[in-house]
Amino acid sequence: MPVGEGRLVGLVRDGLPAGVTIGVALSGGGDSTALLHLCLTAGFAVEAVTVDHRLRPESAAEAAAVGRWCRGLGVRHEVRVWEHGAVCGNLMDAARRARMGLICDWAKARGIGVVALGHTRDDVAETVLMGLARASGIGGLSGMRREFDQGDIRVHRPLLAAGREELREWLRGRGTPWLDDPTNENERFTRVRARKALAALAPLGITAERLAEVAGHLASVQEALAVQVAAAAAFVEERAGALRLGAGLWAAPAEVQRQVVVQALRWLTGADYAPRAAEVERLIGALAAGRDATLAGCRARNGWLMREPRAVGGPVQVGALWDGRWIVEGPEAEVRALGAEGLGQVKDWRKAGLPREVLLVTPGVWEGETLLAAPAAGLSAGWRVRLQRPFTFSR
Image (cartoon, rainbow, N blue to C red):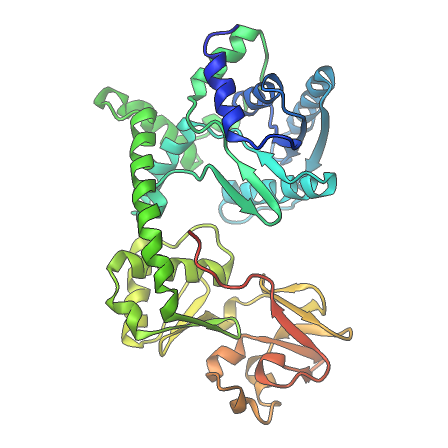
């Protein structure tokens, strides 16, 4: 038995549900390759998916090589390709979002409800360092979640207590190859810089193990704090896709206020990460004082937090997801923001009991420049509207 196999197999066996097929996200790198082999050694039924990001000329050949390895193991394997043009903004974040979307689409198509990712203790430490650079609160310094829901898929990270080099040593002991992605040495990317900074900090005793331990302590604090954050739900009312933040919220501890507002921003925008701490603090000050402010595509006004008009999504057809949150159901037509032009065509909009600014960023149903319906403003005319994701406080 290769050195450390018992411990590693135990992590996987304890970290994944028994009796179901596990979908392994398999890049071919050392971490995910170790995860696949550990799942097999632990006796799990597995299938694997590789996302070809098409960011390097070699990526298609590498994905094909991973497929050959899987066939040799008797593991069903599929490649999903990220079809994209020029990628604007944060490339790594865009690639990560695309990867998770493609992985979950594959899992749903295969009838697989559980996906395993190969993140390690080193990934936790690097995440903490990046959180420090952003001046993150407790949530951003608590490492990585061991499991979470991505739509209908339950995602697990069973190897967070394992080190990256530990996994590679185990693979070497078995004579199992893996692929090295040169992107992991490109200092253009924040995570690569964090990885190299971590190596430089090791002589001070600031190692991946220590940072992961600190993240675990902060995760325990975050779990306790989440009880207070959930209690703050009494001060938050969702109406027509906007949030009314009651005065009682501003008597809560500052960190509770921050986490409530961060969750509100993420719900409104669908973002995975919070804005920088100083910007969130500025927005909280505006909300508490009833002043106007904008942040991350959201607008604060008179104690309400809503989408900013210039940030809402473009036109879609009825039945499609609009602005990342809304579904309009009814006869075929175009859905776009109600806006001032549309609201002017709703004679009795004040009867909805909502501020004008809230209604402006709700969905309108249009035929050219003619408004057919504005369900949130009280003009239904055969169309119905609902939020795909109701607002809830996560624990």
